[in-house]
Image (cartoon, rainbow, N blue to C red):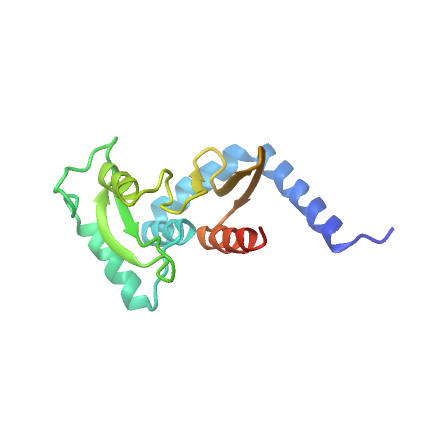
Length: 168
């Protein structure tokens, strides 16, 4: 039996999902261990997944050091707590996606998006972060039909959004 590329990808996706479901505790344990042993790499990988873009190793080192040494929110001077944690704020506007702006507390970072007229976690209309799925979700309702797609990286969701909405 010869499989098409789409069928091969679907089988691989199902196999990966089964592996993750059956080994969820092992994966979580590995991630915690990796986070402790490689805090800088782990943090930067998360920033990349969230959409941060940088031009050089010196730039990302500077951002990481600024984040690491930040003791208070750079917007209002708020104190970081367990419920109001430290966030890396980055650009969400056309042509400047992913550029670092400030180190903010979670409340100020969330309010920044509201102040620029957005109603979701990414600052880009119809794209938001799902904590349960650990993915970026593009969601748009047109004439009562909801279109939804998930992405590992923020920039993938932005590119998809542009192409999808151009075709409308």
